[in-house]
Length: 226
Image 1: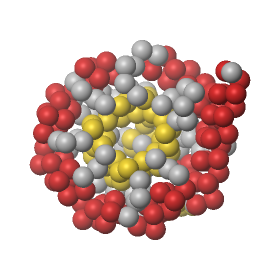
Image 2 (image 1 turned 90 degrees about the vertical axis):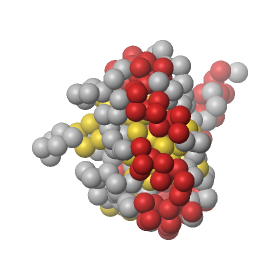
Image 3 (image 1 turned 45 degrees about the horizontal axis):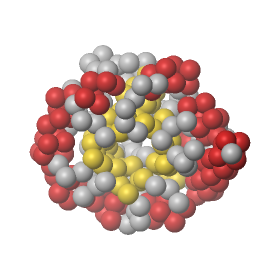
Image 4 (image 1 turned 135 degrees about the vertical axis):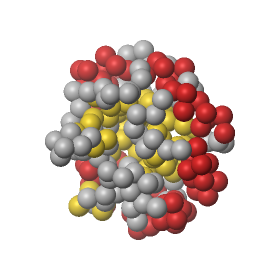
């Protein structure tokens, strides 16, 4: 199988963004104006981080208005905007029609109130789907960066008929990324807390171990198929 793409989300500093590019990470995820996340940046901060990433940037927004999405696309020029929360398929279509970048959609398990089906988001024009967990243990819903491991059997059922590339997230780190790839055969893996030294701060050794393990697992699977 082709090596799954690697996306590291919740990047908060120029130092970490630069490190990700040098480590062989494919996508640098940056949150903008996401109120529930300590990893969220302002648009100006995100622009500075994105400029130094040395890799493709994905900007995550939560229930954005169109003006914010347009400002992000204009000022950061990301590879993709990722809609993180309960955005409707119609909003996804509207954003995609206005922007010259891909639009990705997070889908959370268990399904959140207001969340449409994967098929509805794909029909609306989503270029990729990211399956992640949601954590409500703090009295509110935290979407992404929870460290909560997904139910991979459920994820496997959910993505079985997905017609666009899909990423798997939720409690993935260097130690279990190989198992996630074995079980789910994703197009990409999406990590946040699994490669942090502390919230919002990357651990370069964990990132390096992650990249090594993704490569090793992909080579093992490819070797067994020949």
